[in-house]
Image (cartoon, rainbow, N blue to C red; front, top):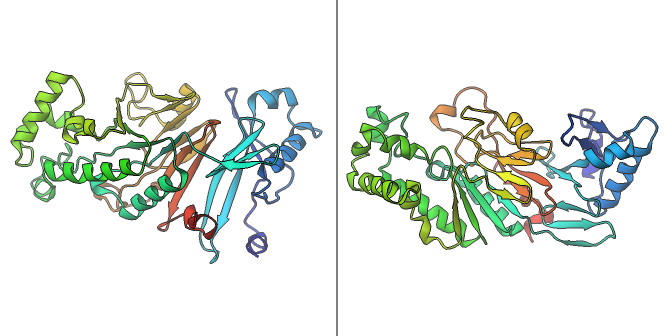
Length: 363
């Protein structure tokens, strides 16, 4: 019934297969029809349409397609009221399987449980997090059971935002550093208790600590001189990031702090926050993708997949002062990296994720 309703909407056209480029430029090819995929027969549908795409008259030469083009599709789950839907990208980097959420579809018809290599959360900003989006993200950990959960912009720096410490009003309203640290550490402990491994990516909001400690404002750090002094001594003696000391990250056994210049790879995919840019200058997502190839990042709060790369969204509240006026591209979205290097974005829209659908939520 839902498919019938959707097909009556003249503005909806779902590509059955979209071929996206590898490293030789932006090649885009669409199949000649716009049928609906059967999600229980996903691999066979891919293969059938792929053969049509590469062998039909005027299609992409098979030798070129085999080397540079990756078959992919968009799966759309429509809610019963017809007003809300979730779309997610699926692709087939290898011939024998397709990964989607918690399933792997094999060419011989087998369906097995999918264990993603990584679940990459959108920028968390723990002290100013959106509680609903945070809870939905925890549900994704429980459902997918990934090998690792990647976190970024965990430390929000609400207590020491260097842009606001000169403002009397902002300084009075802000929490003290110990209050923010205690709440943030509680969030980390909850995430760690539900995860196999947690990877804490050093991000630009962590580096706000540097900016404050390096300035004359550091000893007026919201009335907490002892913490400021401890962070300075830890930084100077151990040559490690002060966030490790502030949040006591070493005591969380299944958590690893990933420095910003670590060049952290999972397989052939580089995962980082991306605030560093290129050669000391800022760079956008598309430029970084052209440089790195297979790439996953956050930082910009808007989610997208392009070529073999992905940018996740945000989990921070949308009513933060500096983002509460005007149009915004911010969107709540986490990313999945599968064992075959395929990537998916899982959105949280109107307080719901795809896991709220009956077909998933009872698992």
